[in-house]
Length: 301
Image (cartoon, rainbow, N blue to C red):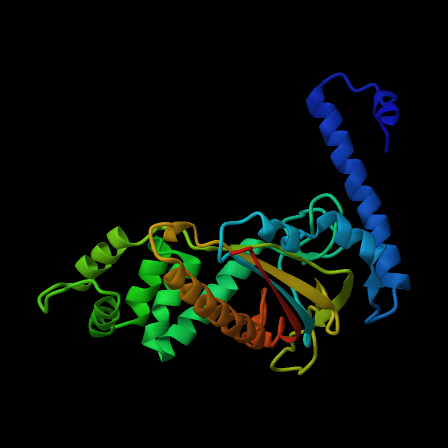
């Protein structure tokens, strides 16, 4: 529908134009939805344009970016393959099905946001740090020590464990300190922002999955639910940039050691996050992946 079509309807105000446009879009979607349900083969996978062109437009060149960063900065490019479908809910209210997959706003390419990657890796890092208390230093350096991190750790760790960690970090505490005061001391001694920057992942395929809840009495499906997903077997790439901006007053040897330890910790987090599943519906086993290649790029030292 073009602008001239709207004018030919003799609309006199903005609200009238918007209402007509909305109704027109709904009508077109209903027609397309009927054609889709009638003619679309089940379990068909759709490719999105030229994959190389998409990567050129959307991918960040972390190799070149890291060359201009401060010493002991590094970038990780992790290529992985989905072993189960990936789904993350989009906010498009007008779509052919009720559960569209999250897409990039302009190119409509299925994606996973950088913030979602941070959340998935943060949860994986918390699980790893729970098993090895000394890795909490890597956890705080990479993800920061914001309020959410504090609340999460207060639920996961006991005061004794936190006191032990802070003692290893060189922060003197007394046995009468409460957990809240311990967090306050650590908060004052460390930067709030984490050293890692997480970039989004874009996929070049999508498909449809069906969940059909069964009635307990009739043992038959009553209301099948369609999900637009990125199908298993699709490859994606995770890009992470690590910049030790808060270590300018520390020695080069210390920063180098911290960067190497944080790199290994990030690799563990990526592997665990993909094993647990990324995106939504992870309880159904969706979003699991396997690492096929990891590339590292270091800044000049």
